[in-house]
Image (tube, rainbow, N blue to C red; front, top):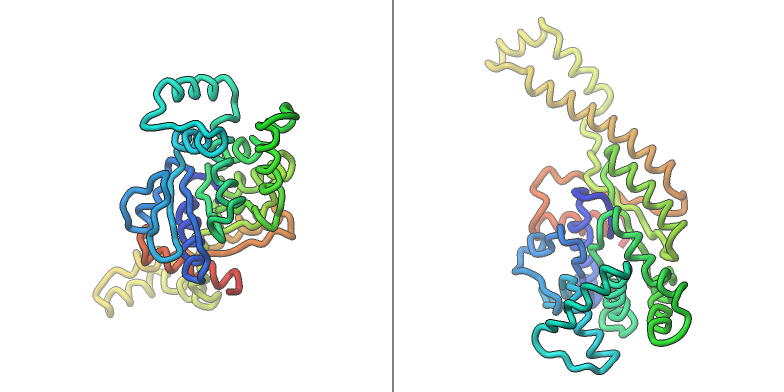
Length: 304
């Protein structure tokens, strides 16, 4: 899951993982974006690099490149590493700074490894936001293009195989029907196609306002706003109707504005890419109760 900051990316990742787990899939959800907050979504303690089981079939973890390096050294190079890796970590920071793509490889590689080893039926990633996701997805490809032999080439090779297989990997972009999120979604969709081998699996549109009023009701609101009618309502009801009618007018305006952004989103995305709609919840966005509502909406959109 990627998307502009603040559109509900973490909520969508958490809800999708919850939905999969409750349908019997062994599911890992991983938080890569440091601004994400899986713990708030699941109302649990802080998540760490080592996956913790939140409920039957659902594990959660947070990415940590130092821990990922430690695991890599142990698994692939048979280097025992105890405690903090100290000088090696400092050397790693130097190499990672001098050679862009190293930290991205440790992030993507860890997740691809979980897929390759079939530790889970589904791995859901709360990935980086739109400004950084391309660098992560394209890292194995970039290194594979300059290193053609040896262990590094072999390992970026199987990462690429996993990332490039649409049966195994897909990117979901989360957006809201607003100007900037739609702009960034359309731009990211084009860059994913041009600069990576990953398939765009879906665009999830969050906070879609429902059609609250019919056209005849909207006309009625306009009539009720006329001074003489409003004065009669105020006299009979004992209160000023203006704020309520203004709120209704605002809801109609927001719905129409967002509908225009939705149209622009549809036109900017390949018609073959499904758009999934999650309604505005009119409630707090965090917590298990909200998560179950989002999971239910996703289930309906996916036809499950």
